[in-house]
Length: 483
Image (cartoon, rainbow, N blue to C red):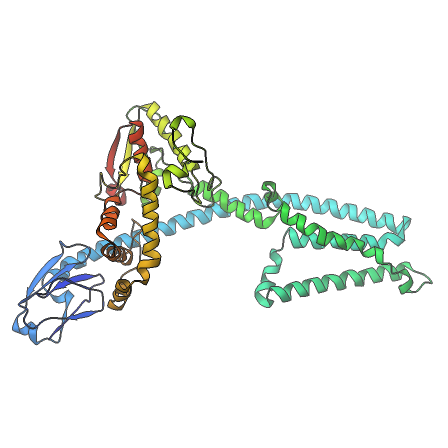
């Protein structure tokens, strides 16, 4: 019996007379000797189909390759070229966004670092000036205070180096480990303080022995270290601490770069019947990036990603809306979410502004999915969202441990390409989702199928437009994917 090998870099389905079987790349299946023909089709596109009669010549072959059977090879190759082109384009666009973000981070960091460095230099010069004045004064007026002043100064320096800028310890952490680094640094500090203190006291005493001039209260300033460290930990969490701590300055610079590069608060332009994008599927990042870079695009969409200033903030629901919940998260998601609902408040304001201008509101759907994915009503949002979240958890924790998924792994599902195309999905992810749908009960399966077409946030946006009675135009996202 000949074997049919899938040497195409995609999942195929084969039918040799006993129904369709899934065949993953680099895997083979036996062809029944009684079969008169073999039918092949792409798992992801059933229009790529070919039926090949089993001639005597083919029957004598030990192995039949999918790429050599009829017209299937040519059509499958064209499909793969489009898939690979989309993956390559998505990767290039992601790299471009990353470079743009890194460039903004560098600019913001340089800007803040320059300002911090100027302040630091001024403070350092002042500190050196006052320290020099104090040393000269003590030498002539009260030499017995030189020791305690030295300990006090060293304590301040240690506290400063430990709290303000401890990045200089990172190479030591990597080389020696955290414990040995701490032990070594503090040992050097103690030896340095005590050694210099002894030298100062030795020079200041005339006839007394060094033991006679060493006094314990000279070391009391060391107490500021354990007392000030907790205060430092509290101070670092304050908003204005970013002006003092360089490591917080780096985080602040990154946040500013994110605000300038990724965050979008909406940009509603005036003009009657001017198109205004009021809902966009978030998984098409590159297409969105291309759209908003055009200064002519009017958009009410709000995007506040993690790391942005308004991420995680919630807003109360106005009493006039007649909705239950402490904040908008409850009617939108059925529970509070880490990203908050400030984006929703801003979005409503943007949409209302667009309506005042008389704009033409536009809702963008997934590819070839216009009109699909809507919820029944705004009041049904929370329950449907909770149900989708529950099914997503089942997909991750229950389905992946199921016998069906283990069989798929044995059959070679891991051989599928994991590179993501412009919609953020890969061959592997889509096949896993297909298996998950087939694993679900018919009710849950149909629920997820009906949900496809709009993103989760979009479902809320469209439901709100319909609740308010705002007319909108339904648009396919496809044209923007080719730009």
